[in-house]
Length: 178
Length: 91
Image (cartoon, rainbow over all chains, first blue to last red; front, side, top):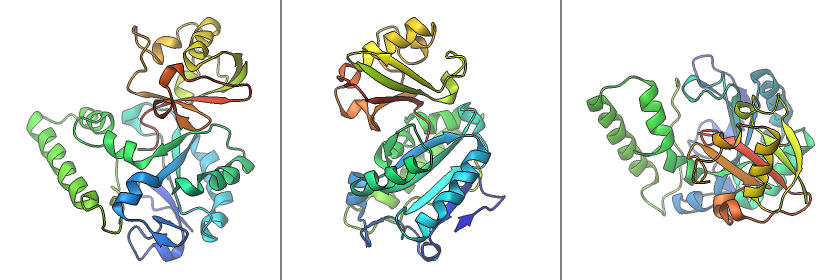
């Protein structure tokens, strides 16, 4: 089902069963991943396009989420201003052991640019000193004390979320606004 | 060797809006040099003066980040697909 909450920066496509259980979609062949497995296997195919084209693609992909061939999708409501991309980004999440099957679905629906990103690389970029977090901080006109608080908070949440390798991965709690 | 290069939106101002370019190259660096020959100015938005990838740009060969292959010296084969995208995509 497509979850389009105007208060959220992201629009999601989830299986209804995933809504009540945080991170339930982070699974492979029906088994939820541990944090260690998540770091090794979890990632996403990236689609960059205009919002209306991603809306149309999301509608086409929704049945594959409902049938659990695609675990989860999220995409930008509008081009993120701090990154000057000019287009919206869709992430089509899956385990790398299933990524060829998911790519086949995407290519059948007209996706041409083949870009796979492991979540561990995204997490690295959102850690203190990482390109994404530092760009976000720069774009929000924070003083150094505020910036350090953000870095410290992010690091703490990273450790809480992913710190124990054998725990079931619950995924990152998404922010509502950019 | 003929390969397809997918150009992401932020770089299309150099390619007159073209999103796909066919070209001949032996490795990823050759490919970027070939891009520069056809679309002057694009190289400086992908690589620095030391021919190293800018930290905000990622290059993919058939979906895989070339950093996990042999970097810019990764050999390319006929029919391969290269994608050049901002590193922030998918955050």
